[in-house]
Length: 152
Length: 214
Ligand code: FES
Ligand code: FES
Image 1 (cartoon, each protein chain N blue to C red):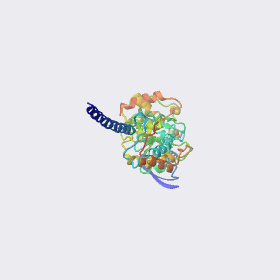
Image 2: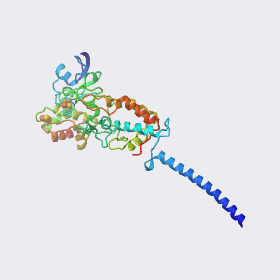
Image 3: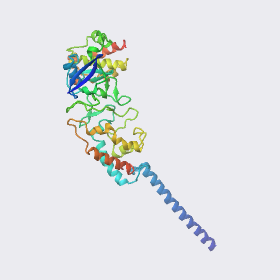
């Protein structure tokens, strides 16, 4: 165990965990930020996606030792009032079915639009390929990203 | 008349000898050029190497090739723009794209999952701070290449990432190359140890970096 200071959603937190502990478990178990979900634990599904210095990363695949001095943003910190263009578009298109994958989908979509504000269908498909949805909400995800892109 | 004939004949023989000698020289030159340029399946060497020992160089490249074509190396040198994955070199799950710099695209970058240091486990993504494919403007494809094709590609600065001989030699020390032996989990290792690989890599280069004939 060792002490780590991490910056999450604009606040510093100190946690005492093993250096190999995935960030996902620090967020959920230590900081009680439960919006980021666990799906596979091996970077295959995308539900645990968060931002690190603006880049989408899979929090199950990043050990705590690799995020010190980085700025982490989770779904809870994407916007102050849940009004990020992606979140608004998600509501407009009623994207979620069961909802389990959606925090990861939104975080990936927000990262995509931050880097490519006007993606084509093909670019959306390629960039979102790594986020699985067992309820198959892909068509609505695509539409919502298109809608959100108009506000970027 | 007889004198004239003898003189002419002598002159002719002298010219013939000169002609034959020149022809032999020319043929030797042509053959040497072929050996350098590699046309007609001849061995090809790199002139600026320390030594020129085609046998030692080609024997070493056989081992180099066995490592470079192993999934731990070849998976990130695919024919297409999607990396390969696993000991069977299947297309990488989630179909990540090469992107212009080889590091992926938008929210699908190599580093999304390949952290500087990975989380331990059999199926977790291996970590490395430099994880990437070769860039789009120089793909450095290994997949599907014969030993000859790969050797010729490796020594060509226009195809090898602008590396001269020294840089090519030093590439064995690259931390991403080294990570092929240290990816963790149940992944198969390349057929030679890292130290053995380095030895044959240097042997190949230092003896002329010859490309085998096939
Ligand atoms: S839980 Fe992280 S990618 Fe599936
Ligand atoms: S909404 Fe159910 S898994 Fe995506």
